[in-house]
Length: 266
Image (cartoon, rainbow, N blue to C red; front, top):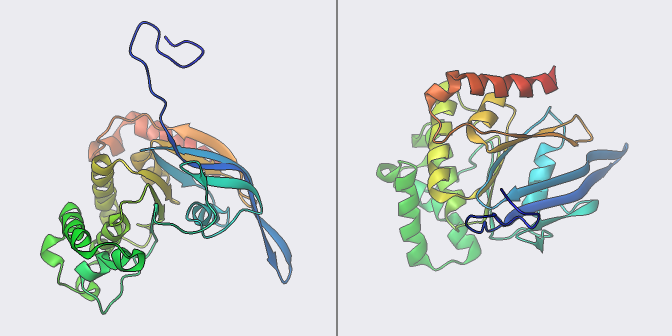
């Protein structure tokens, strides 16, 4: 039982969970040669510290635009976005990004690709090198640190991208359909790996996907967006026990959650 001020009655005091990212009445309108295109309309979204939030919506609904706002790459036409309470008006080191393609530099080794944020952000080299090796161990690629991207499978390249994203210890991770180009079995394997990494790191995550099953498997909450202009039309908590595994995929609660979300797109 809790009092109106949020404190537990007859029990320990519950500290409020800090908000990592906030979008408040965010709208985005692009000006084109053929006129204005409204991409997002009145988006309100909070991501709490350590929370994994997935975003589902039809193609062209503004999911990637929302991610660019969270990355500080786009300033909203109206409304505001904040990271840890500070305005998001430029890219910064507190955000890490993973795209659909890992975009590794083919002439650099796996280790050097992971080290790229250290170079661009001017981080001290020795600690960054230690962290790079720790992250390669975390994603299971220690033995491939000297290999080049062309020598890796697609799934291994995405793991390098995840390690690179984590190198500078960002507060917020942004993942834009990072497994979309992979085959179904590799996607399932990497979803398990991502959950393992997230449970160990407990970063705040904004994960964009077209896959209902992927969203339900990974997320604490699933945000459903409408067709353009993108609006939040549902915010669905996912209460499946963690860690989730392949048995989760065939469980009744998993199926119920997928069925409910699918109803938005029928």
